Image (cartoon, rainbow, N blue to C red; front, side, top):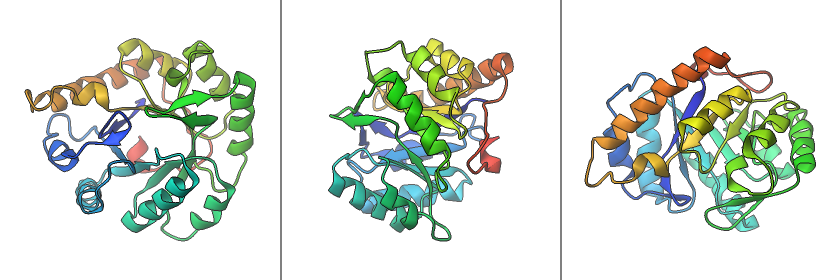
Length: 245
């Protein structure tokens, strides 16, 4: 299936009730394999409990570093190492490679392009983003790359994504502003590894606590449907875990 990463965030900030929301996810639980949160808004005690809960369920733990300042990225990487998450999404920094080569370190999935603001927005030409995808794909220690095609307005998002996936030889994760079935279908059609989704699933959770689990189940079912039409996402390069399949 097209891989779906549940992001326990709103507006690029980890929700304060992330542990409670995660533990409420009972519907279609066996199919949900990837759960993520961000460094921004991450109370360390809470995200440790969250990491432990996700790992205890046999799922893959992702941490996205949304504070794009040099200090924020450095502190975010340390948080990833302290928590022992499975995968870290961060800005591309060559010095991160050595820190993430130690045994037991998270996989490194760098962002493509320049990101700024909150929510993050993407800057970079299609040529620059494609070139970065090709270059990082050939870099030892890079397990995947992350593109935010729906967080820019200069190009058609589906066309931009296709240009990147056509040259990338590691999995491509789509992050940011994914909310519709049409977007998920475009992601599958482009051959991307998967996508993240958070705010669109978490809205109204206080008035309808069961709604998050229901919407997660619907998105997982949709992933299976589009995978049947377009085939499994490319997993060339990087490290492939049993939980990806």
